[in-house]
Image 1 (cartoon, one colour):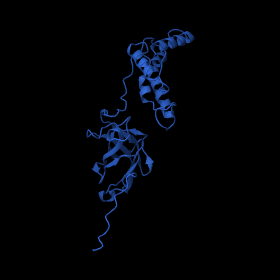
Image 2 (image 1 turned 45 degrees about the horizontal axis):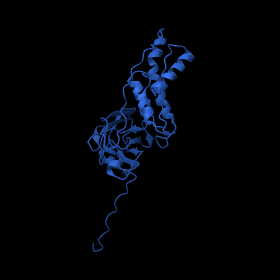
Image 3 (image 1 turned 180 degrees about the vertical axis):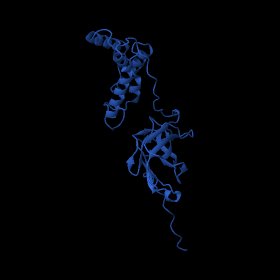
Amino acid sequence: MGNSYEANKRLVEDAWGHGVTTEFVPIRYNWGNIGPILDGMRAAVANGTAAGIDMSAYDLARMDWGGGPPNTEHMSGSDAAIIADALAKSLAPTVQALANGGSPDPSPQPEPEPVPTAPASGEESPDPEQRDAGTGPDRLVLKISQDAYQGSAEYTVSVDGEQIGGTFTASASNSAGESDTLTLKGDWDAGRHEVAVTFLNDKWDGTPDTDRNLYVDGITYTGAALRNDEADLLEAGTARFAFAEDDEAAAPSTGPEPTEPEPSPPDDPAE
């Protein structure tokens, strides 16, 4: 790939004039044996011949063709945004130099900080994360963890049927006793409300070590823990929890949708 990159760079410079700054962002198409191509791209970045390549876009793009299965042949709209963001960050120094009346710096730009990729089976998850979503004076804090397998668990959160934020990706390991912290901000009245956590991308290949799961480890509202504020989402579905200013009004609603409640034993006919 190093030679191909250099040849392409010369073609661009010949067309636009020497001194032009070229930036390349690789796209992960999954045709054939992509391994040698990826190895070549990373080697070109490492030896400085392709310092303009932003590998973070390669690692982040899902290639899910607009919400389909990941790692297929086509980009989605979100992938295009990831690639555009990578290009914008790479070109920012050049644009700034031009805006200041100077000329673009032809020297190679340093490689962007690597973006942690989702852990494979058997690997440790990245450090727990803290996230905020929504606006308002009230605080609903969720503790979330996962079993990662061939990628991390993804989920959405809604309050009273309205989604807050986008699609979140879990990073904390449930087996390690860690939890991500998601703080939802809103302006909810004193009545009864419902928060719903929806697990989107379940995967299971037959063993406990090849299973992707999502866990709600706890929820607090305005600093007070909800009752029955935990749920194990072992397949795609939704866990729902009630919350209110008055603790008596915050009794839990229906738990995770995929889990059927165990039937009560029959009454003893002798009673």
